[in-house]
Picture 1 (cartoon, chains in turn purple, brown, green, cyan):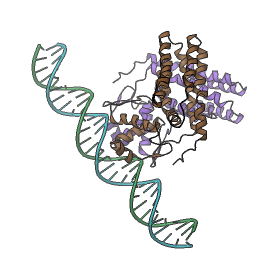
Picture 2 (picture 1 turned 60 degrees about the vertical axis):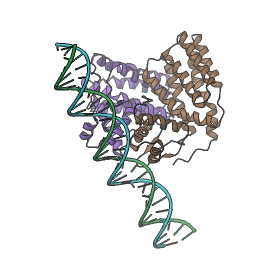
Picture 3 (picture 1 turned 135 degrees about the vertical axis):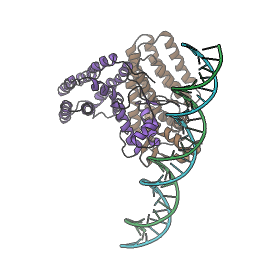
Picture 4 (picture 1 turned 120 degrees about the vertical axis):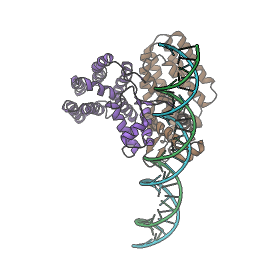
Amino acid sequence: MQQIGNLDTLAGSLVSRVRDAVHDGTLPDGERVNEVHLAEKLGVSRTPLREALNRLVSEQILTLRPRHGYSVPAMTLAGFEAEYAIRPILDVAALELAGLPSREALDEIDRLNHAILAAQTMAGRIDADDAFHLKLLAHCPNPVLLDLIRHMMLRTRRYEFAYFRECRPFLSMADEHARIIVALRRGDLAGACDALRSNLTSGLDPIRVWLSARTPPSQT
Amino acid sequence: MQQIGNLDTLAGSLVSRVRDAVHDGTLPDGERVNEVHLAEKLGVSRTPLREALNRLVSEQILTLRPRHGYSVPAMTLAGFEAEYAIRPILDVAALELAGLPSREALDEIDRLNHAILAAQTMAGRIDADDAFHLKLLAHCPNPVLLDLIRHMMLRTRRYEFAYFRECRPFLSMADEHARIIVALRRGDLAGACDALRSNLTSGLDPIRVWLSARTPPSQT
DNA sequence: TAATTTTATACTGTATACAGTATGCAACAA
DNA sequence: TTGTTGCATACTGTATACAGTATAAAATTA
């Protein structure tokens, strides 16, 4: 949720490595995580790996059943809806607290929006999208709120990865972002909040469609 | 954030024990946590204790500096404001999603509100307050949102404990709750949201006053 | 005396070993 | 054949040992 990357210690770096493995599907959703095998594969002992797995449980990226082990929770439509419904709430509240950005900040936000289109890899595109949203809220005075948003970004990312892995990226994203920027440029904070809310809800309809068609993995 | 009490395993039970120690001040804020000493005191080995401490770091109840160890973050006015500002956002959104409670649910909510006054210990009073709020939102269809609220309850609890330890409990809480109930009884969801928001913001002014007077512990 | 280096101690990070529990397969009975 | 019981195996949970780093006090020098 917080010290999002602590590459200083071995356990800390494993958090990122395992999280990435969940995001890109190396650790498939719905399947259990074998500590011994994963530790061998990563070339570390079980202790720091378990430390990392534990933190990921608290991040809700893994689940833990006592004496059964860690699992990657299955991706479901219900789970997607519940997790993604948080962002509009938090982001809109943060934008209201942040207020209108300065002229320079707006230019930077605009630049980041164009960078989304320029990104080559899908990971790059998702990173760019997150960067856009974080810059949009950069002046929010509440660090806890921003942490929660970063947390939800990490939690939901695997859905986007999985979708883009099988389907074309939707580039309407940049248009929706542009609407936010336009509203901000004319000093219309409420309008920007509306545009942001719609970007964070209806903007994800393609993933909804894809998810409801997908056969969910058997939860072991 | 989630499996809030997992008493099944030793590490799981230590999460609760250590969290309680932070809440009631046994582990004072601003101070470091010595793994060896704490393990001896609790009669366990370092491994499950570290597992518990790690989860508490992800819960933001402890902080971790590499090769320096775990610490209880100092309680500050800024931290209090930032953490408590989340609840109005989440709770109001959840109440809007939950909609008007049934007649029976309202009676139960009312009962829980009276139970706050009846509680003898301060821990009991805080538990009762949390129970009231959770019942109020019980019909919210988004489990992630409810989890976040529970998470914030745990994160902020130590401020209430510390305040009540030195000051009288404020019982206006029950009156503020009553206003929420009255609004709900007359079918006024928006009014209930307003009353809830004010309960979760201005209702905490005594703690603000106390905190700004308190000399903060030296952050080691 | 004040500043700096040295040295000893304590604590964290990681690896490994062991114990107890879950899981799947085989043997057996109905 | 089908359901049940017992057993072997694999995996998780916990304890302990060791290595490396931070911390603080002592010693040394200016």
